[in-house]
Length: 608
Image (cartoon, rainbow, N blue to C red; front, side):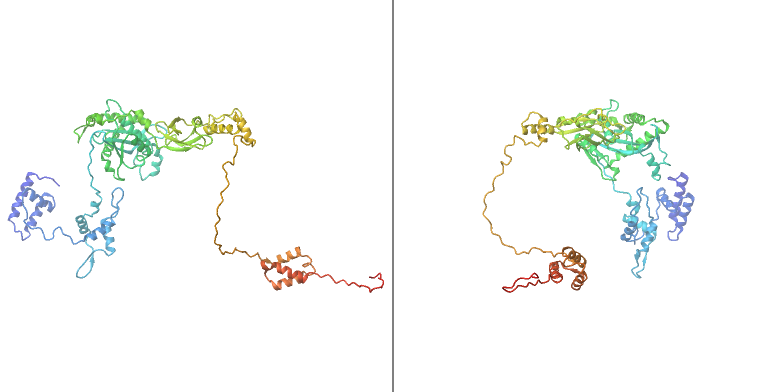
């Protein structure tokens, strides 16, 4: 469709306008004339009406119909249909169509009720769509998001914006060369291929000064954004890089996303020590750091697009070329808002606004959150350096000369610029602290300490700790001897310390107290019944303890007597009485002895 008419077409529109003015508006003749004009121009009837008004000033003169702009569709119905379409995909694509949502709502009995018949009907999809736009709940209106506000910074180095992005670059396995990804083979739909090159991806860090838009870009090989990468990028931008690259110094505010790398203790501690206010925008609000997002796009289009025509042997070469291009871009490309280059805008900074710190100081104060480690009896601690050095072991034996004892703890400071070396901090009794730089232990192929003596070739005793020295002094004083060896000998022999005169000197007799009369409580002691005994166990017991009562001769009679009275078992409380009754019944009785006493004067016979 032509956006403007030729002179011949303009004359035709004027002729048609005069013809319309003479035509009868009530016979339908005007509609025929306008259709003829639309056919001649190759446009729609509505466009033909627009051309008549635009180029000839003709209007039909009809009043708008009554109720124009009104709709019979209630807002509640539009919102119910919008609710079905509320969840688009992450890329903004609408999953459910409006036609399907209207059909589902109609199947659930939704619609407009006829006030006379009560019949519920659903308007057409087009009518629903127009009504939803009128009520402001059309899916295309809902996905536009919140309006964005505007903020400003006061001067260069007032606010810096930082962001990291994984590039479409990666390092070839077995080499240092950096090449572009084939996005047809490496994408989210083929996660296995992305995992294969995960640790060889190239991450791009960008920092932008909000006022001047001066920026810094840094590349590194990593699987993703890391706190160490963020810190190195900040230090590179803060440090003085020479006269051709003027932007440097400390910002007042650092504005970033709330990712794990930007909220790590390494970054928060670093900003705290430099008095930099660290602010994180709301999750998912990438437009909050729009300036750095724009520069990510600039770097992709203005610099990385050149890499397809270059041989990039390693990441160091990539960084060098990026620095060369960035210096040129900041020095010679005019910024549309500033009407000058980025470097010229940054150079308007005043002396009191530029706070500088030497690079070696920046690297020295960069450290992870302090960790505390317990010292074992071998004075070895293990520390995760949080770098590619991983977990390392450190020997703290030399700290024993400064008062460190086994099973105490030390504070450990981790600095990524000094890894794998750590700083051990000891809190001294006078309130001060001592710091020691300690390198990791060297290990052999069997993960053994290389500085340890070999069996049979020597032995190295551990240094005496401060606690051990105090213990020796106390023992010598207790035994009244001059040497620690003599004190140990007496102690091991169990000798009594001579310095202790009266070990019970603090023990005194208790005073006399007036007695108190209590109220007795009527409480019976709990009792327990003795265990019952089975008939067999009772028989065995009787045969063992009373063989004269229960024996082979009368065993049957005894068992019959017992089973008649106790078919199952003998209660524990009756065992003694049953034994007594059986002894009385079955105990054999001795026969009576008759004695003949002779009368007086008779002589005793031999049979007496």
